[in-house]
Image (cartoon, rainbow, N blue to C red; front, side, top):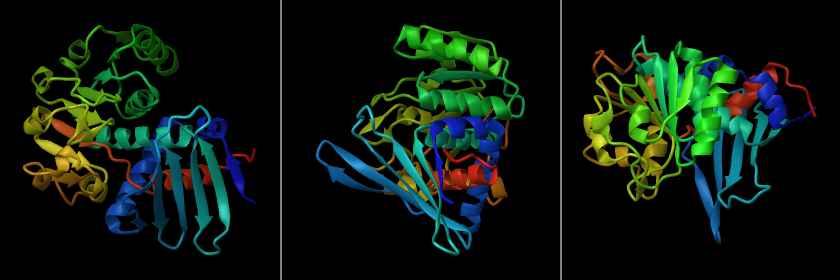
Length: 307
């Protein structure tokens, strides 16, 4: 039987710890060559694009995700999971929650692998769905003492801070500037739709870990090269995807490309991550292809009900 999974089932089944663990397994599988995950492909469609990502966990499953960039009211992501032994469709997920939790889970893995073990304060720039799942996942890997959040909308950042307090039980406050949000924070998350830098790297304290989720290409980027210049450790979840952006990703061009490390390799111990308390680490999230399908498979194994 094919499971049809909605956002409601995703939210009921995938907590933060489970999602982070699944993404850690996916990254290790990709590093070992078991998860085959080529860069995303897209088709131009007038005023937007249809984007496809695909993955194959050798001998177990294959599948894909599709979404568009039109921003229409009823647009939704589609994730399809096939059994590799029979070709049967095991599950189909429709909605935004699976993709959002996947991205948050990858960020949680990065924080766990790269942030200082004693990291306890988090600064967020952005107050949307992606910002929320980053905080949600970070709270699963570090005992947060406080969250500060800034976004362009005072109402949205205030509501975001309230949600952190209520749902995660972590003290949180909205602040008036991005600088105030990131100053003296152990972990910083950038999850905006800005096409120009929203922070100044000079405001970061020694030892900060930064995760970037928004635009990061040479023609539009929520952070500047100043962040890459101060980064002692520069990591991404998919070097292949980082090199396939058009225009290129900032961290995938010289003089930064030679420093860009694979998060899966860091997890496997093949390359070094953080080696000092004062180092600044930067994670450039690209969304490793196949990870949504990996997470849907994990959800099915956990027994999500059909709708």
